Image 1 (cartoon, rainbow, N blue to C red):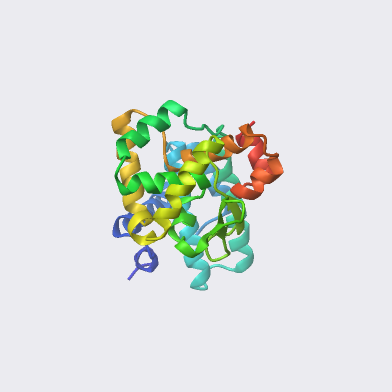
Image 2 (image 1 turned 120 degrees about the horizontal axis):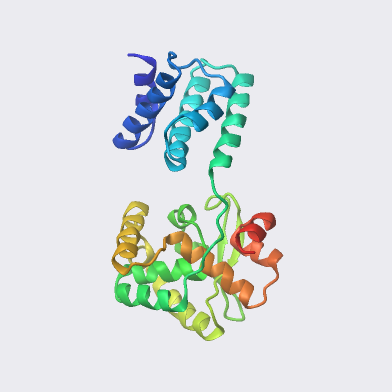
Length: 260
C-alpha cells in the first residue's frame, strides 16, 4: 500500500472526503512533479498563486494538505520542527485567501418568512434555539437539557462547559425585544422538558435542510446567520461589546471587525 493509500485509509471521515483529500494531495505534488511527502514551505504560496484553483478550492486543498501533514507527523515521517514550520506557513497562506466579510443579520422580514415556513416542525424549535443563543453548530451538537439554567429573574441561560465548547461560557438567551425574549423563553422551557424529541437534530440533516430552505425562499442565510442576528440584537439593545463578546464567544477584536 502506497503512502497516499495509507493516508486515505487513516482518515476518520466519510468515504467521499477521504477520496477527495487523497486526490487533492496527489494533484498538489503532481503540480510540482514531486513524489508525495517532499514538501517545502515555499511551495504552498506558489501553489496558491500559480495553480488555476479558485480561493474556495484552494482552501479545500489546503485542508487536505493539513491532514496529510498531520498524518506524516504521526507516522514519524516528518520531523517536529519541519512540521511546525509547514503548518505555520499553511495557516498564513490560508488566511490570505479568506476575505474579511461583514456579518449580516437576518432582517425581521427574512426571519418572518423563515419561521412561517418551519412552523410546526422540529426545525422551528431548533432555529429558535440558534436565534436566541447565537451558538455554533458544533456547540449545538453537544448540548443537552442539563446545560440550560433559569435564574430567579426569569432569564434563561446556557452553560457551555468545556465539554460543549472550546470557549466555555454562560450565554444569555435573548431575542430582538423583551416581549419576544419572554415569549420564546416560555416556549423553550416547554421544549427542554423533552429535549431529545423537540430539539435534537443531526448536524448533517440540519445543515442540509437549512441549505435547501435558503434556496427555496431565495434568502441568503445559513445557521451562522442566526448567530449574527443574536449578536446584532444584543448590540442594538445597548449591551457593551465586551459583554457581547463574553456571551457569543467572540474575541473582542474579531467582534469589532465583523460587526463594525
